[in-house]
Image 1 (cartoon, rainbow, N blue to C red):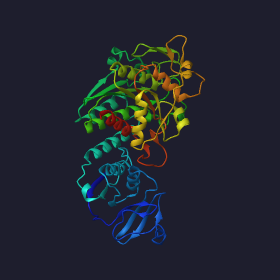
Image 2 (image 1 turned 135 degrees about the vertical axis):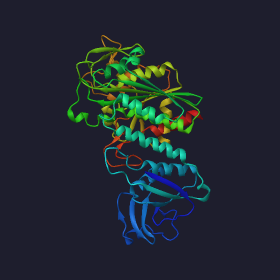
Image 3 (image 1 turned 45 degrees about the horizontal axis):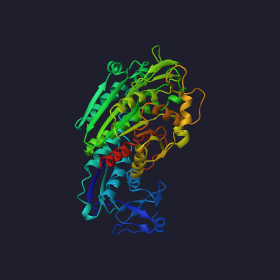
Image 4 (image 1 turned 180 degrees about the horizontal axis):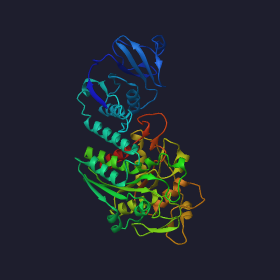
Length: 462
């Protein structure tokens, strides 16, 4: 747990100082080492940007900004601070301060219910100019807490999180906020003609669900659609053993749209938001969808399922169809959709594809909150490879590996009107971080794109 208080002058013996190439700025009154003096003080570097230095009042945590954003700087401090710290903050405005506090709150390890040892609490006394001491950062604190809760949810193993359990978790997290929650069970999904979600969930003893969350803040309408495969074996198109490791993260898209609407409601933004969490467990069994089966999506289009491991696009097809029926101003879907996204963009960038203003909005919003997003094209020739002889389209082209990320987006485009402002976010790379923490991203679930979607809603609400 991270707790924060604001002060006009430091009262604790440990300090964190923001480093710049010109020196340490600002500087605690009785400790102003130059860059060259670090060696004389016996500085022990623990990372590329952090050193612990013995100072006149005890150990000093020296943090080099080295081009880091305020958010990332705060996150580095949080990870290096093992005890209570007074942080002398080089901020001049409330916006800068809130970015720094966001980094402090998001930079720690994600809690887990499966270890007896709890995370050590750390408190920060953030020393700021006198005019910023009374800054209200309660909403920043609450949204950061929601993001950490979403990270913990994504980290849960599949034996602890299945479609109905995830639906109940969503209801619980929305409690106390002005969000209406509907949970559609398999009977309701059948009545609502959601053939994609039903087909993916047919092989599991734990049936699929759709969670519809609605926030009515007034103004323009944003629809969010999230892929929520609580575990993906590949179905009858079974993944190899090593390919199943990490497939508990395949519900990160639905968790992202959940986190976004929670944050938007917390801020009370003047915008209407409907989020669709499309939930299923993709398992092989005697009742599972077979390669070659034809299914009917909510909007009436038929799909020849040639690979049951390309299941995310099937559940999203129903969610996008439902979203399109409401004629929103923008539709944004989020999914760990393709391994091809990781091959193309690596593990830190998410890809965005689509048409209309939504693409530009997501790019601008991601940039504003220091999240990495890269626009990819939607080449029209890639749509032709999804043609089917017996249905409106196929979910894959067997044997074709070219442009897999864009092919997935082209499939989804069939369920969104061409004139609709629509963005598809493929977060397959950055949704889970297997490597060392970086910036505000911890090891494990990242919660990537939640802050971008909240920022987007703020821009639409203006």
